[in-house]
Image 1: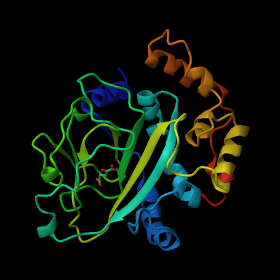
Image 2: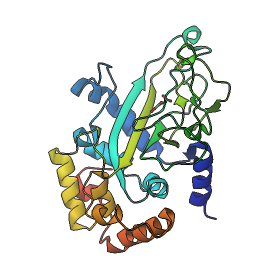
Image 3: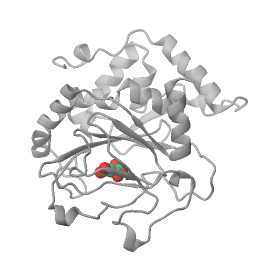
Amino acid sequence: MNDLDEKLAFFKENGYVVLENIFTEAQMQAWKDGYEGMVSRQLTFGGVKGWLRHLTEAEPRLMLPAVANPNILDFAEKVMGPFVQLDNLTFMGFPSVSKEEAEGKASGWHRDRYGWLPEGPQYIKPPACNAIAYMQDLTDEYGPLRVVPGSHRSNVVPSDDDRQKPHTDEKIIHVKAGDVVFTHCCVLHSGTPNYSGKLRYFFSIYYNLSYMKTTDNHNGPNITAIIGNAEKRDDRRTKRLFGVDNQVEMRVNSGFAKHDEVIWEEWIEEDRVVLKEPLDLDELIPGAS
Ligand SMILES: O=C(O)CCC(=O)C(=O)O
């Protein structure tokens, strides 16, 4: 069994898995360095200052490497099949609060967009997944991630009074900077308030299926150029990431005579074979590092 298969088995059982060392120090530094500028140019989202959205269009040079990271996409395709589209990228620097304010608190238990309250113990393929990344080690001071393992297959739900309290079945996850926690949309999870005295930088790279709507707008000139470049290289995966999926008609109506994961592997291989050249960020967006 290869590493991705082991990770997939863990994910199906628990509703999340950690993908280690996905982003480099240099990438994370560039994102952190760019954050204040993005906040000043954009964009408050939903009334929350610093909660940045529509960033692949606004900052393609910085953000395309995040949303199109091949290691994340390889795993996402294992989980969702070759239908992976970017729903949205959210970037946030959570401000610090005092230790007294943070102590004994969860930020807020929830399931994610396109989720549901599960009824039974069987695993259901997610229509959406969250690749959550942190740009600093997630120590107690910065506020670890909390997950209730298996809650993507159970109707566990905190009462309103317990929404911001530690959960009896929680697992506290202290990932390293650059790791990604990949979650099923139905797994119950929460952040933890940050009392580090510094910003807690976080990405939510949210993927859904290429036949769904998206939350970020992919119709602007920069994403149109990315799609045009992918078109020339027969890069189906990059096109699909931004909603252009010429295979979808056939793949969503394949007759379903093979196990999903078997036919997905065949399609993934088909996509690999037609690809003429990999994405060259420098050529696409001059000046990229
Ligand atoms: O802040 C965190 O660590 C959790 C983020 C989260 O809950 C989410 O992206 O849905």
